[in-house]
Image (cartoon, rainbow, N blue to C red; front, side):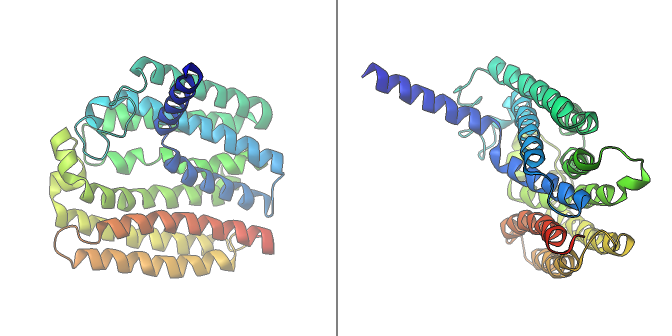
Length: 305
């Protein structure tokens, strides 16, 4: 009986720590970092390098997410989406333990990347965590509706990490294709997150977080989503034409097809009253980015571009 109780307690604690890391978010970050690796290699990088980058990136992202929850416990406690799911709100994990866990995993990630991959990838990895925690979480989120526009830079770093993990730092110009991937994710983040914020606008208002729908209203947010989506699709196409020797036809086809669907979803949302269609747009935006980077991987493996 004691053994069963101990096992149940261990599993409950383990589940709480997994929730603390926000694993669903980490998956998309890993796909984009792997895309950067394949693009840099123009083929398949070594399996050991892929595993190291994935493991190091997962640790850093998990730690940053844990610290984010530590800093936003008061916000999570009043939002219906998170009030019962976040382990710090439910007190499944002591807040101090979450902070220590977050700091410790980031230190391990930095050391692992520095020693087993290269210093450049380690610096970029820890820089993304610091930016997410300090700039987005601590400074921007509670102060400005442009929080996600600027703060989204943290989530755009993984392709750069993947690129320099394979090739190191060869100069700013040589980073051109990876910088394009950074810009794509940077511009993708606002329409993706604003679609979610439309769904959660009442929660954000209750938590006094100045997300765009709370500050400017639903229709203005929809128009902002459309503007950013059009710019996003244009940038993905411009990326191909600027580096056609690096990006292949699978990527180009994906840009055209996915971009057309993305704009269609946004226009449909804009023509609908209220927030009907926001959830479909939000889910599609996740698929959009994932498939776009999978297209890069396919191009690299099949055609060496």
